[in-house]
Image (cartoon, rainbow, N blue to C red; front, top):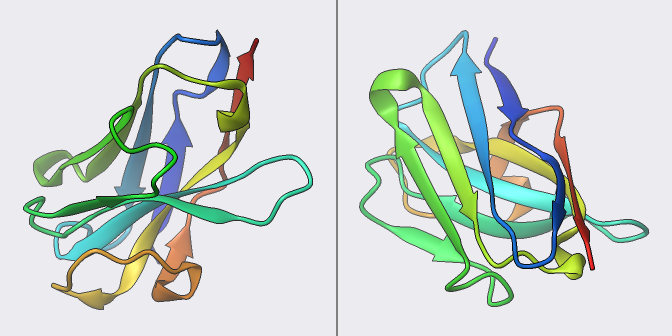
Length: 126
């Protein structure tokens, strides 16, 4: 059973930075696309970023493009989300997820993922 554990969330002022980590255990990580999603207060869960299993391709939602960077270290079974220039609208619980398919490209849909972490809270104060 694959387990994903996020860490690195917290309270930060607008304009600040945070780096989220997603540690995978109990199964294969390197061959699967990894994604980050978030759910803000009163909102539905939404796609944030995705990285191909090889790390050679990434995708971002328009609202974080140029501010967030997704990466992964397959040797450490860990994924990352570097978040810079944070805004109050970035406040949300952030989840990492592993894709259903092996050796596929980036994925932006919630339904494309079958394993999820428990989430980490990011709060940006204005």
